[in-house]
Length: 561
Ligand code: F6P
Image (cartoon, rainbow, N blue to C red; front, side, top):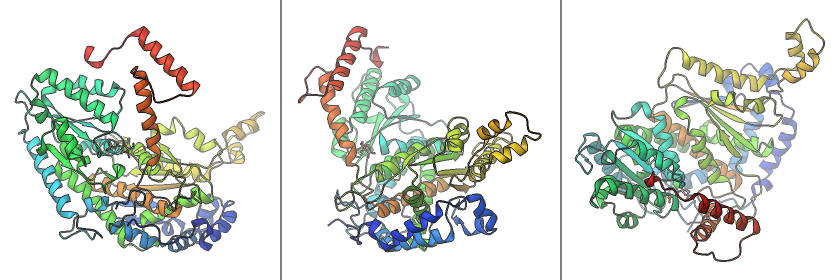
């Protein structure tokens, strides 16, 4: 049986929610600058240490009363029991009748994982052991390609969670890459990425890792098939597939049918969701390029966050606080988006990773009961590396007039420091969150322009910045695998807590199916095989246009170049 939420009441009907909404009416007028001026202890009260991470919520538009009300609401939703259900392996994925046990993948205890149905640890440890052995042979140069040279290029072929997690982590941990190993990622189906990767890889030195939980995702299979053809053209020997391909999948039968040698197929389980899968064999590329020890440290860092999430009281629980403040911003203050802004060049892919984690998990309009969700759910998550973003879209954050909560993610020390450049990055992060908090009034601007000239009033209006933009700042020392693991797990648990607050199942993604079905039909039409029925005039017109363009220009495949 799946585990529906224990509280059957809609979240918006709970007295705790009504109290929050009432408080929200008063809080709309709060000015962050005033809150700091009134309370010298604000930073100490609203910042939290959590292992390697330090979280500052003091620039959020909350007071002690706000936090108390949010925590009361979390208790009314039975949050501690819901967390226990998740971590205890209950079937929290109610629409698919599955547990969501990614935490078991980073459980470092010696004994069994406390899991409702069965202990999953023997299988988890067995696959992890095989990953270690495989990667160690790879790094010793024992896994040779078709002409005897060691495999050095690792090409991860996967999409969504089978790409974003490993790609983000490999990029973030580049300073740990094993000498000589090179990581490449191919996800998109239009073959641009694949062509560019194949251009720089020598087939005799290339290991393809096909990552697909279902081993049926069209983009991944199309890329894997093209990669196999490319390899076979160079090797001229069908046996090369066994040497040059590995897979991470829950459908080991399909991987074997593809030609992948059973010893190189690494299993994962239905209780690992795609966007929660980098901790499983789906993270094989991380171990393959950064080493199994680095992968271990990543798991251990996440495991520490799990232990904190499990044991810390709600009022000192980092993922819970991050989540509840997000709920406050989204549902009480009414912010439709969340900007994620790493000030750490190693985390360039982190915003894209969080987009999937948050929006695929909680971008839902139906609650556990099948009725409409009572509250607006996941905000649109977006962002980019902080410094680049400052010179691109921060104008709108400062003066666009909309409420855009931001998460600043700041490394105290960079992974590769050249000169004093990293300090400049930190200075920018702290400056931007301060500017967003305090703003600058037109009067201040005019004072700075003293003595005033004609036209200064107009200039001051253009230069004024309203401020009061709510931000969270997360600080850590230099990013290593354990810190990265903790950071990812922090957001994973935040997403779970928010799913509880919104009453949605964070572990399914039915919304992506319709587009996939229509794409199959459209592909048949493009291939001249006809479709299954009428299409609308726009789609029909676009089909005609694309077919005409392709007929005029001819086709050029990557292999013909
Ligand atoms: O279509 C969405 C999705 O199912 C994601 O949830 C998943 O991460 C991705 O596609 C890839 O799926 P698979 O690992 O089965 O290829």
